[in-house]
Each structure stands twice: as structure tokens, then as C-alpha cells.
Image (cartoon, rainbow, N blue to C red; front, side, top):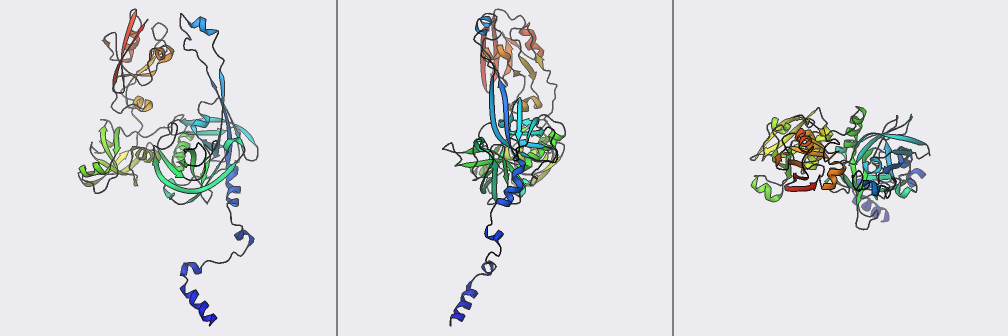
Length: 457
């Protein structure tokens, strides 16, 4: 009777459960992440960066107060920052966050085995919060392989490896809890992120987010938390974007070049989807477009809804720019869009923002009332560098200089006129500010606001 009962129980067990067996070896009994960490950890490094911050007096160079306040000027202050990084090649190419090493004058990289190397920045980008470095004299270095970001799925087990609080290397575990997160990271970073619940402590910035195969799927960049601690939502920059950074660094670029869309888009909400004739909300509707936009050249128009770029869905402008950046300048991307309910396909070239018409950059010298002021003509390249609206025109401020900053000028301001005389070209700024008279009035457009800045020469 007992034997029959046991047989009935076995027949009732699902087939999948019948495959489960008792661990047969000590290794299976002590199943853990230890072998994975042992293999991946040597490629994750500690970074010590130092930058010198000038303590400049607001009266420096002032003909009246400069000499008086010079005696109170403070000496340059040294700032130290601590973070993590990941070695990506045997010859010492490594990645970290921009906020760890940006503008650093001295970078020291310490490996898990206590070897130390000086490092130089090859390419850095504050907007993406990424920096690519080369370790001086490095050979046969431990490194991690980059995984295709498009293969990452929600629910995957991940490990975050870094150097929190400077106490030494630590490892935390979690899962991928979200993809395509945009506009949620702290600091200056913008774009597309992998979301994880693996704790990311201060000092983990720039560290590795790896999968269970030991491949790098992202670079840890920030955590969204209410308490200020590691309990919160972590964000990592996808490895696919890191690969583009490495490629451009190896090609000799000092700044990251993003493909130029030449348009303004907005997410399609439920309200917009009804008016656009869409069954479901999704995609990016084109609100404005530059005449030279590659999307315009490919046949897209204002009002079209871009649903896919390079066979991946896009629902925000940040996702769209990420997909374009993943494709890279010099290539083309297949774009699927919807116009009046009809789905269409276009091939869009990925191009850099055109530096035309010529920017005609002008630096104002000592003979003007605002020495150090730097201006240029707005073109797509200048507009992209300054983060201005795509339709910006006219003469823009690249650097206000010390005196320009004192009167209220800011980078990105568009100069309209001086003392009632209209500015048509960058050279007009130099001419009009050479002998402007005792009272100077500069008309400025900042965003959608017109300002009048008045001062005595």
C-alpha cells in the first residue's frame, strides 16, 4: 500500500520538478557567486583623482578694485575624488564616470592586486557621464568583455562591483529591474539607463555591473534614494554606449560625437495618440525640424511619429538619441515612422552636426570693454555644443570672460545689439565694444527672454 502511495505522488509531480536532483558535490552544495567574482574583480579598479580649483576673486583684473582685493585672494584649492573604473582591454583602456575624473590634473588607478598606474583621459563627455582612460605602461591587463546591451532582459541576476567609501573593493547583487530608463539619473548625465536594485554606494560610481557570465552590461553611475544611502534604485550606463566611446577614443577623438537629428521631438501620450490616429500611445512625434536635418532628407516631416530606430522601439527623445549614438556617425539607421496612420520605413544617415555656415569665432581683446568675451555664429555644430534649441540663430556667447560674467552675460546668450546698433556678424561685437561710450547697453536673448544689460565702460 505504501509503495502504491509513493508511486501516485511521483505521478502527480510535474515533469519539470522531476528534473530537480540532490546536489552531488561540495561545489554544488556551496553554490555561490564566488567563482564569478574571482574572475571579474581584478578588472575593476579604484580611481583616485585630483583637480585644482582656482579661487578667483570677482574683482580680479578690475582696474579700480583689482589691486586692493589681490591681497585677499585665496590660493588654488585641491579637490580629491574617489571612484571606480573598469579595464576593457589588455593594453589598459578603462572606463569610468566623468564626474569621477572630469577636469582632473592627476589620476591614479589602483588594481585589486595593489598595482598602481597613472592614467590619462582619452575622451570624456559630461553629458553622458563617461570617460575613457589609458593606463600608462599597462600590459596584459585583466579586463572584462562588453555585452550587447540589446540582449539584456529584466529579471537577470547582476553583480555591482566597486570601491565604496574607499574601504576597498566590495560586491553587491541584485537583478535588472528596468530598461530604457531615461531622464532619471542624477547630476549632469542624460540619456538611457539600465535600472537595477543592486546596492550602489558612494564610490561605486564608474564600477562594473556584470551578468552571471562575467560580461560587462553597464557602468554604474548613480542611485535614486530618499535616505541618501544605498537603499534605492541604481542606474547604469549600457555597455553598448561604452563601446561607442571606446571606438571613438581609439580613433583619436577627444570629445564624443553624437549623430545629429536636427529636430525636436516629444513622447506620444494617450491624449496625443488619439489626435494622431494611433491605436496605442508610443513613439516620438516630430515637433520641429531643421532644414538640414538628415531625417528631413530621408523624407520625414513635422507631425510624423518615429516608432523604431535601428529595429528598436523608442518612446522618448533620450531613447532615440541613444539608439542613434549606438549606431554611430558614418553609418545609416533604419527608421520606422507613422504618418496619418500609415507605417513607413526610411534609411537615415547618421551625421555629425554640420559646422556650416562658418562659425566665425571671435575673441575680444584688451582694446574692448569686455576682454575675454568669445562669440560665434550659431550653426548646428555650435547649437549642439551649447545645448541650445535646434532653431537657434544669430550670434551666441561661447565664453563670457571675467568681465562679461560680472555684467551678467552667460554662455549660450544670443547677442542682438549694442547701444541700439544691431549685431549681424561676430566681428560686429568686437567693433561695437571698442569705443562704445561711457554707458554701454547690450541687448541679449536668453531662452525666450529679452534682457538689457547696462554698465559703465
